Length: 204
Image 1 (cartoon, helix red, strand yellow):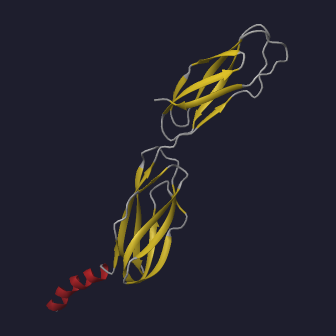
Image 2 (cartoon, rainbow, N blue to C red):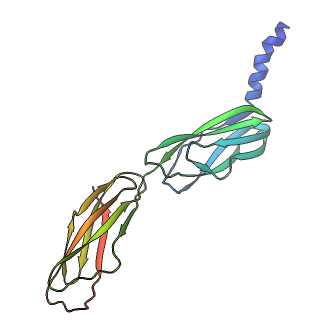
């Protein structure tokens, strides 16, 4: 009986060593990206692999079945980066099972990268009286996953254009308003149409 008890831990250790994950580098992407999580694994026998993504991350499929034959194999999962703040980190857990028994596990670091997006909107058509300046609003929406500062510029032929303010600092999802003052230059007749161009760029 003593010999049996002495051998049991050794046999248990050998069973756990039948499946082994090799080191896997971390993954990073911007919200909306699809990332391929590839893991190298060694072992023998029929093995079921299950992926447990971190909160917010979506996996297209969470299970893989493989028959390992003693050589290195690669299994892959696809993850979609969630709309989380830039710099958010998590870990994907992959567990290997023989039947219902866990025999190995691996963790892979995941990180959300900065995504810079902005939307500008303004009245589609503007009408103004002759002889004086007029103004209208431009709405700036920060659709990035981090706080951003934006610098705006505007121009129009035969008009002076002033922006107030010329720059905005916006949190993710925040919308700010810029007042655009347009001052005609020279002789402008009734019915004159003009095109105003407004552009933006990250500030700083």
